[in-house]
Length: 143
Image 1 (cartoon, rainbow, N blue to C red):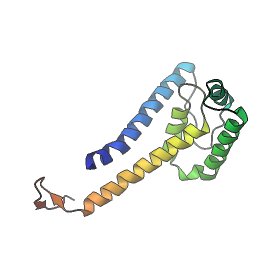
Image 2 (image 1 turned 90 degrees about the vertical axis):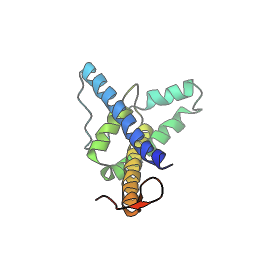
Image 3 (image 1 turned 60 degrees about the vertical axis):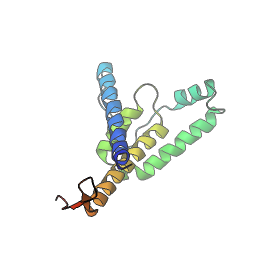
Image 4 (image 1 turned 45 degrees about the horizontal axis):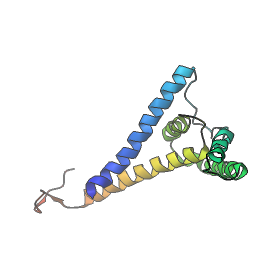
């Protein structure tokens, strides 16, 4: 179980990094620069909402637009709580592969924040736990 607890945060960060690299490559091919993380970006979410209605995932385009606007309002309120590097990474990830949504952006930011917090908690917890040599005998903790 401890192995999975260490793998999941790193997996999330790795997947986010892959998405950003793909987005940066696509932006470079399209002649665009990377998104700025200083302010909440403005996305045209209508194509994504329309696709949701067309495919039957959503029943009402206006409900989708309202949900995206609510997500953007939450991002505006909490934008400064996210690290600039994480904001840039997630803007690029949310913009990769089609129309970007605020739901994707906020989900990415929250996952990165939570994965980093979990990683830091596990590092603190493992530093305070007695170390064993794999067969139950205690060893001195490395510092």
